[in-house]
Image (cartoon, rainbow, N blue to C red):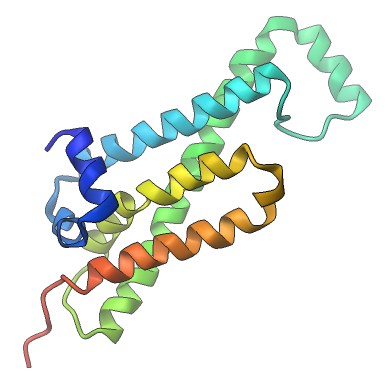
Length: 167
């Protein structure tokens, strides 16, 4: 399955979203890393443009940054890449555990590895929303709550298509 097919199915086909639990883990990682790269690139462009800062700058830190010169940009890019990767993978893992709880409540069959893959593909819309909310300063406080709710909704809808536990 190609990236654009995964993307379209992740947006509005919950039955396929549940079926993605059977995808090879390498394909799921590639899909997630495309969003990590996009997330990192947009954050880095905003940093270069002066629209966002990576961390609060003290006078000593600004002075140290000036002595480093052009090296600050690769360092900032790598730092942003590590932060974005950590954020997205931790979020996927947490929602994978939440999905396992949902499966138990719905009396559905599934393992953590299956729900992790579903959670990884279901993060499509929450990441797109996070990127959009990043450009709206008024939404910064609510963005995590809104995107978490959307992610949970996608996982819940997908969990309905997991096989039932035999009685």
